[in-house]
Image 1 (cartoon, rainbow, N blue to C red):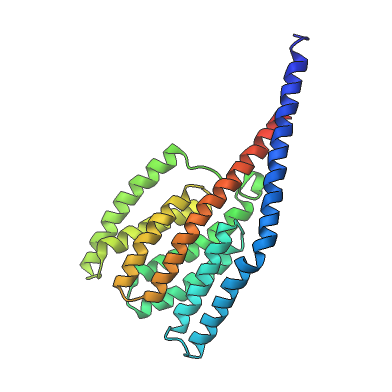
Image 2 (cartoon, rainbow, N blue to C red):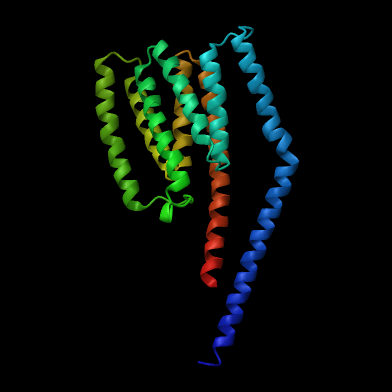
Length: 257
């Protein structure tokens, strides 16, 4: 026994050192990348937001100002979500509140109802990200369990069928697509609120469907917003994968000690 103990200790020391080195390299690369791209990452979207907001408010651009500000706050909210920044929740809460009015004016009652539910889930997500971890600590990124995936898949099928039947009864213009995107969006948002990595796969899928749906309904600016959402969802998938890897490496290093 005494002959094996030093080898085990040396192995753990090497493993911990390698993990620390990878952590340091990843953090250093991320900080350098952030420093180089800070102006582009925030400056360009800020400029576009100002132009779109002022242009819509002064009617120099052919967009309703409510839809324009819903667009701006929605895009910024998802960008902050990609960055795993907790302030994405209040920003997206503003966006959905504006879109409730936009969709009611367009008589898109399913979309308006969806955004009311979004507001509720944004408040829940804001709380969970801050206090949803162990001992009311900050919530960390996790993977979906098989049991949760099966439960949510079953719920999606039942809810989509029921909502499609309801929308068809009130002469909705696209009952199945409206129901499918509504249910899938709510499930994706619940997973995001719980910081589940696989939520980004759902967001990519549902945003692609939404692009075609809003083009069909004539909400072209909103269709552009969901195209941006789709791109940001891909970015979120890769960034959260990187953050999850760093988190898992840190956990392994802590267990090794």
